[in-house]
Amino acid sequence: MHDPATSVGGPAGTERPTSLADRLNSDYLARHIAKEEAFWSSYMGLTDDATRARAQLDEREIALSGWLQDPARLDETTAALSGATGEERVALDGWRETFSAHSIAKPEGRALAAAIIEMEGALANARGAMKLGYHDPEQGFVAASSVRLGTMVRSDPDERKRKAAWEALRSIESHVLAHGFVELVRERNRLGRMLGGEDYYDWKVKRVERMSKREIFTLLGELERLTRDAGQRGLDHLAAKHGRESLRAWNIQYFFSGDSTREQDPYFPFGPSIDRWGRSFAALGVRFRGATLTLDLLDRKGKYENGFMHGPEPAWRDRGSFRPARINFTANAIPGMVGSGFRATNTLFHEGGHAAHFANVDMPAPCFGQEHAPTSVAFAEIQSMFMDSLLSDADWQRRYALNAHGEAMPIELIERGVRSSQPGAALSTRAMLAICFAEKAIYEIPDAELSAERILEAIRAAERQLALIDDGNGRPALSVPHLLAGESSAYYHGYVMADMGVRQTRAFFQQRDGHLMDNPRIGPDMAKHYWAPGNSKTLNDMLRGLTGETLSPVPLAKHVSRTADEAIAEARARIARLDAIVPFSGSVDLDAAIRVVHGREVIADCATMSPGRFNEFAQTFARWIDARVAEASKSEGGAR
Ligand SMILES: [Zn+2]
Image 1 (tube, rainbow, N blue to C red):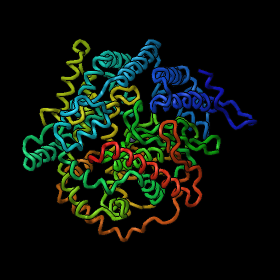
Image 2 (tube, rainbow, N blue to C red):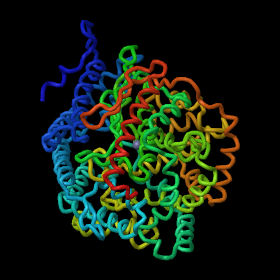
Image 3 (cartoon, rainbow, N blue to C red):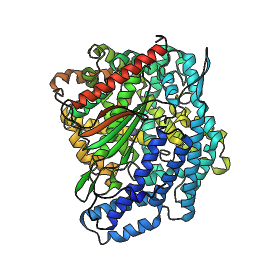
Image 4 (cartoon, helix red, strand yellow):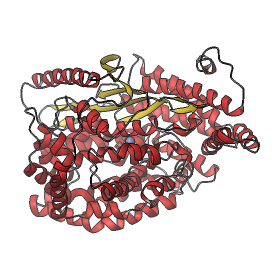
């Protein structure tokens, strides 16, 4: 690896005074950018040699972590703070927080942390090399990614295939347990305890969320209690409607969503997804402040099997001048598969919400606008999940979810969707909680008892308690990629906490403005209160700043515990107000340069936002997708 310090600097010819903050800013950017380039290349499968790409990523990750973890850097920053004023002080404060979240004072701790990154790399390779697939009742073994398997569990009309897909997801668990996960848990716990945590989970969240494991699981436990009755009602509803056999892990999600996913599919075509995203975000007043966005949206062999956003270059203010962000985000949509258009649209709103957040961070150092610690996972997910929550709103569906003939989704269909999914809402929140409680349980196994069998036992016990059935969860905990990778382990609770924050944020806008869809005050308000300060404020400070409240499980519990009739009444009220909400008209200008790629291939490019340009870009993308969908249906012999 070349010296990263030479790859980044100020504009050519400018003299840089060498203040500590300046030096930290440029040293960090060099290492961060180098690591993120390798990350994207490895996770997108852009090179022919996956093992080498992963090794390069590991090497650069170790270089960056080593820099962030060096206790000398924390000491130096703390010492410099006493004499600092103004922006310099703000920047150094941010760096002190960042180093506190990473620095490992003990040399043996640093050595162990580096060894753990190598183990994680080896596990990721073993997982990537796994021959994953399901046993089709007619064709025998069929190779399939975990994304495809998850979609099958949710939507395949053939129960034998749903069961086979669920069993295939479980096979990921035995594979990772046989390929280093047990040892990884042991070493992670050793590190966590060495550095003052109760275990790895506790240590990690104290650094990342600035909350203890106990505080987090007090909120999650409260949510569990508040949703237990509604969860049981959901199961009773399913059993009454479809019989006891529907209460199997591979059936529950299907019966709650299967029909409406299929029926609503024509209203979520894949092709127009970019156009809908652009117009919706423009109508909300969201701006990306000159950011460059790269989107890689389709599933592909060798590509990481989960959507994410990463920012190779954080947005920040370099001595008064704003430096726009460079952001990549990805999804695993499969053209032609039922639900793939919705999934793509959802990813654009979700990851686009992350991108809007990080593109708007306006602080005097790049440490405030990067997505790793001390940026709170839960806080970051509020931004993305707020945006994707709009897609389930009846007013959004009436205005934006049009079929190929330009017809809006019928009200009866919207109501049928609510009627089938609402009774399962509490269970789907509990399915997410199951992953959090299972992961917590893994790290609470005493060292002497740690084994593959014991880990599976702990997972199943947590799953049974949350899913309220003997099978456990429809999404087996260890098939969730977050639990394996270092940066996303002890992290999943962030989605549940974010869901709480989303309900609080939505309630605030709803109450103040009467609507969410096409509400032009949302983008500017979120930019001001949630986005601009970056990680300089805690989750609770930010929530309080906009909504006046700290994080609470109550609004979410109420939302998922509503009866279908209550949810339908709300949907009708939204639709009734629709005509009073002025639709967005005019040219989409998100103040961003956007590019859609498929691996190494560039599909559509929107370098500037001149009038009409976004529209052309969205159409280029739609044509490309339409061709892929046609190809997919041809190769299936019109069976669908
Ligand atoms: Zn997210």
